[in-house]
Structures are given as structure tokens and as C-alpha cells.
Length: 392
Image (cartoon, rainbow, N blue to C red; front, top):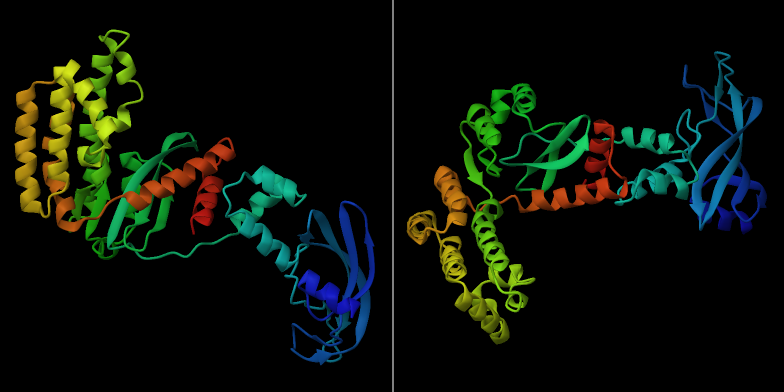
């Protein structure tokens, strides 16, 4: 009865528990297999003849906060047919392993959490290099290039590169790959190794307003529609509005500045979603500053463009908005107008397909957490493995 209970606690079948010793930090369980037959790896002949025994210390998954160590009495059989000596195989322990499969599985599950390798190694009372080696043994499923390929960069500061690049399947919402650099030469080297037939599977290429991405898309994905992510072209207008607010606030009397403090989200929010009290606050700010009033009205008109039902309507609304912005002569909107005009065709493609980089930005946020809790990664391959494993 006690043996059955301990087997269930350890999640190991077909063993005999011969002894247990414990203290406040560790539990040591002496065990041996109940299977009395071994199969020769050379001639596949079954045998019950035992050559000798060997003791092996094996790490097992923790019970509570205590480390579990198995003292395994392993048998070495001798084949009656070919005289080969061999060690018995056990379901719960891999060949040449000193950690049980349960221990490895538990540790790998912990590696999916957004925690540092150091904190995980402390929990399992093992070294960081041991955890890192196990991480490098992980494999994630590889897929063919997706129909919708989303590309974005994140600030990884690893492998002597400031920015790394992430490729995401926009349909199935999963990471396709992580690249060590967003530089054009690195991207060209990566995509040139993929066959043309495979690259032609990509029908939509979603990106931000980074010229290198556009050049790569035109060269290696000529059949794909290039789409500028909605968030990236929309924030051009919001940035302009925020810069107007900052300029107006600097020249304002101290007594009036209280209306402008922490008003960024208030001004960005759609007017029809404001409370009556919030509308009054906005009106006060608009009344004191004509440039802010014009900028706010441009922002509200910009939502008419964002809400367009199709590409044709969006194109007309964008043309009208650009003309209004030019007539306003607000200097902060010059960069916004230039960006929208330069990327007009790619921006309007969004209204035709409705694909965005939303999921990619979600992965980027998770990557930031992984990087922050670990205080950065010096080795890119380790960083990449952690990203792919955490986001799988």
C-alpha cells in the first residue's frame, strides 16, 4: 500500500521502494525496477540472467519545496545468446540521463513562464548552464511560409545587434522565426535561402513604415500585397497631436497648465466616447489654444478615415484629410502628412485585407518581459530558443 502511494506521488510505475531518507531540504528514495527481463540491444534476445548491479543517483521533480533524489539500483544483464552485457532500460529514465523524464518535463514547463533562467535554476536546485543546455535541446515545430507574413523588430540588444527581427504567421497567430538582425543584408541572406516556390506562398506582407522591409518584400515576395499595419499609420496623427499639446503647454500660464497635465489619452480618445465632464475639459483646452483646437479636429476627422468601410472610401477620406492638414499649416503635422503620402498605397491595402500586426506586437510585449526579468541575453541563440519556447 505504501509503495503504491509513493509510486503515485513520484508518478513512476513498476518500481519497488526499498528505503526513504529525508530532511528539511531533500528526500532520497531508494528504488529498483520490478521488471526482471532485459532485451539485448544486439540480438534482441530476452534474458533474465543478471551480470551485476550499479547504483545511480537520479534527479526527480520536486515534492513541494523539497528536492527529490532517486537512488536507483540498476541491473546489468548478460545475454545468453551473444554474451553481450547491457544495462536495463527504464520507462521513466532516458538513456545516459541523470534526470527523470518527469523532472525534465516539469523544468521545460517552467521555462515557458516569463521568469529568468536564474530563478528557475534556484527552484530546481541546479545550475544555470544545466538549465540552458536543456533549453537548447528543445525543438519547436517548423512550418512552411504562411499566407500572411507579419514582420516587426524588437530591441533585444543581443549578439552585438541592437534590434532583432520577428516573423509571425498572421493567420495562425504563431511565431515563424526570430532573426538576429533587422538589417537589410541579414534579411536578404535569410530569405535568399528560401526557395522561390516557397516564397510565392506569401500573399500578404504586413509591416511598419521601415523602408528595408518594403525593399525585401518587393524583391523576395513580388506576388505579395504589402500592408502597413494600422497601428503604425494611425499613430502618425496621434504623435502630431501630442506634439502640439506639448508645445502649447510650454507657452501656457502656470494656472492653466493643470488642464493639460496627463491629458494625452483624453485628447486621443474619440469624442463620442468621452463623458460629459471629459468633454468640458477638452473644450477648455481647445478654447485657450487655436492650434490645439485645429489639431484636435484633425484627429477627429482622421477617425473618419480609419472607420472607412472599404479601400475606395478610405482613399477619398485620406485625400480629404491630407488636404485639411495642409491647410491647417500646423508644423507638427508635416511629418505625418509626408509619411501618409509616401506610404499611401500600402496604407490603403489595409482596408482591402484588414490584416494587422496586432499579434506580432503582443509577442513583442512578451519578449520585453522575458528580456527584462533576465536583465538581457548576451547569446542570441539562447534568447531565440527562450522566445520560441515561451511563445509556442
